[in-house]
Image (cartoon, rainbow, N blue to C red; front, side, top):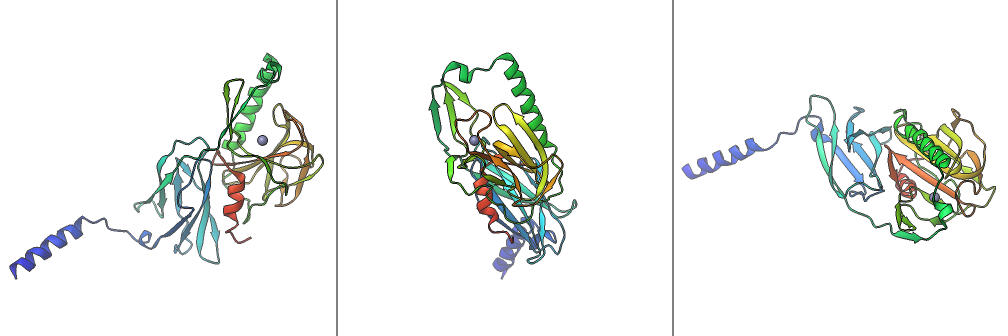
Length: 291
Ligand SMILES: [Zn+2]
């Protein structure tokens, strides 16, 4: 009998040491698809059983924008990993209210080998003169500003679509070494498109930039709100203006070969919380959404 009492005491002591889940986070149903996110990839976060209470999600120091899905009483959002994020394990924090302990989910971020291309080009094609260099720096500053000043109100609806039907002719993430010098990896995908082919907006958003840029030629950037922007480079014509709201699938411009390119194609890129992610992966994962 004494043995049993001692055993019960020991058990209750260990029980006391266990963390106590506070309501309502104990009922939190979190799904991350896929459950690991490689460099430059994106996952869909799905949080259920909250009875319309909006959770706060923090990932890599940034707040994640969540959309409410009435049908399943769920909140959904995209979790991205920049192309050059150091591989490892990162914590995602989900909190229901300030008084509750956040739920911590550890996400594995494995390395992904995107390959490297070595090129030898004539010096005059690679080296920029002082004026060009000045222009490139100024343009880069302007574009980077658009990625950090995004409005948190999401404008996108459901699934993301391909801007042109063409196949991938230049993969996302590939590094390049030109004349022995390492250049930044390819931050988008090059899709096959002929001169004059119509380009569709990948989702709903506000046109944030229409400009002729040194490297990317005639370029359009759409801000979809909630920290997501899409980019369309090397166009021959722009059919939208800055500040204009465009619906998903609307024709925003025509494909071309402007900027530093060898032939017509569409460079299509996505930024998610200022991270460079594979746009094709976003389209694929968003296929799980309602519309
Ligand atoms: Zn490109």
